[in-house]
Amino acid sequence: MKPVHEFLFPRRHWTATATLLLGFGMVAGGFQAASARDVAPRPISPRGELALEERATVELFEKSKNSVVYISTLQQVMDPWTRNVLSIPRGTGSGFIWDEAGHVVTNYHVVEGASGATVKLADGRDYRAALVGVSKAHDLAVLRIDVGQGVPAPLPIGVSHDLKVGQKVFAIGNPFGLDWSLTTGIVSALDRSLTEETGVTIEHLIQTDAAINPGNSGGPLLDSAGRLVGINTAIYSPSGAFSGVGFAVPVDTVNRVVPQLIGRGQYIRPALGIAVDEGLNQRAVQRLGVTGVLVLKVNPGSAAEAAGLKGATLLPDGRLIPGDIIVAVEGRPVDSVSKLSALLDDYQIGQKVRLSVRRGDTEMDIAVQLQAGN
Image 1: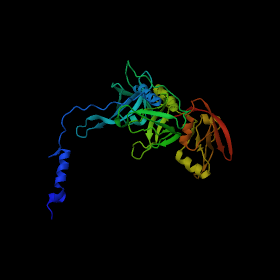
Image 2: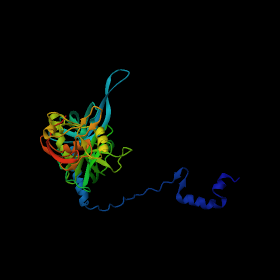
Image 3: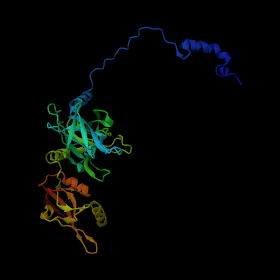
Image 4: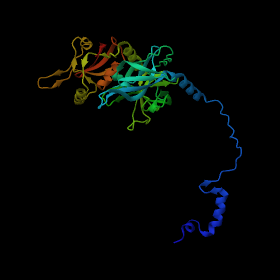
């Protein structure tokens, strides 16, 4: 067997190898330092002005970021050894200033189960927040902070009913705790539905490919004019990270629900005064071969009774004889109980809506004046 040094560097190559190493300035342990000399930095190439679209995006962010807040929540736990109750960090999210009174809007799931919350403004000020009201059905919550002077300007409010697929949108929030981040994308789809783990179905959602990650929840979705058009609420991702499919509660819903949360502490939905059940409805309409919502019962003295709606009849042997089946609201098809609730939610209490109803083999229109729901 050859000696190791000869195996690596055959004797006939020793001279060439040594010359090569000396040429590189090799010394034991590394490269030999070059002789000291002044080396000037490379000259900077002129950038020129930002493109028009870039300037618009920068301006939008600078104008809007002070209205966006960082929310950290607390949870009370008991020390099993001392029996002392402690407040520990629970989670984080985003929100935004709603008005000059210091109301902050965020998602319900950001504050769900929390014993307290702290709101941090873009300028670094921290405030303990009080819970004003929540609407689980819309994944919305309102907090309030006592800022006194210097409340950040509320975001301008836009509309969502005229959004177009392909329209550019901007999401501002605090993903993964990274303060005040901006992502951009487009409106990918409209009027989406999303069923949460709790079984609650949220309707009318905006789908966007603007990156929405944990911590973005509750932050604003803006149009290119810097107006609020939605509240970032969820992503569709098995890993919990951005996958190109995010959802936002439309601002038309927000602007209807939030004032009630501020004024009453709760949202009172418009209703018909009927009893319905999602599970039973699915089985019944499938057996009947129709699409709609089966009216199980008409509550006495309700708006539905005044309008003449008919409930189902339960026979002594357990059979159910269908009454009216609601198939549309103002011409918009109904295929589930959650869809019916969402469509009615677009109207005000006291407003009349036209229901398309299937009664036996006949379809008719019935006008119902909406009442306050539970």
